[in-house]
Image (cartoon, rainbow, N blue to C red; front, side):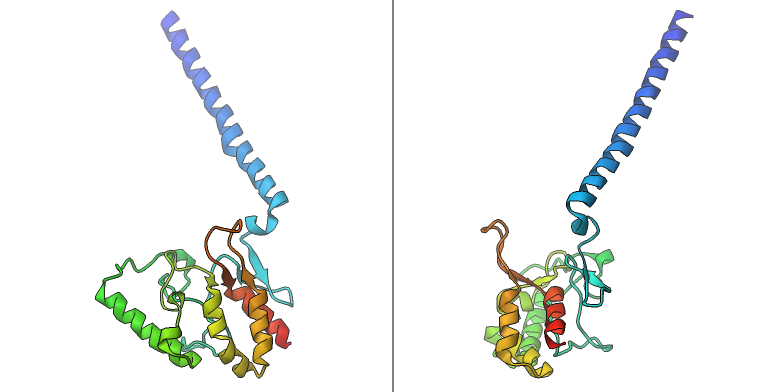
Length: 203
């Protein structure tokens, strides 16, 4: 009888401990962390959504997107992002890279094809095309391009929109994001935010 009581008491203590820790760690901790995120970093906690001048959500600052026509061809009046291997392009549900090695002949051929297309589209020499214009990121969702790739597109965008090239170039320079903490990573340009600023500049 004593052994049975001890076993029941032990099980009851275990059940109460499980319920307590479920409430504290499973519910309480989650609510506290969510509250801190909403209070301290509301934009980031909600997906870093980006709105246009009319207040309509047009994307996220964390996920790239294509600026193409119905046929999938790049639109000359917009700055173009780097390629994406995520699904049909910037598919957040299929994030990933091609996983092809740098010596893979298919990847080399694809890069050379992209290099020729980017050069022709922007009216520059293939040697002037930066690496991020022809290679996808590891996630396939990178919303940024290098300042070099953004500058390469200035003349084409300015011509397509009938804007002074100097004005579009100044816009690009104003949108360059410095290295994190001053030394981590490389300077970047967020394509979606740049294109929104471009639309506001014209309009």
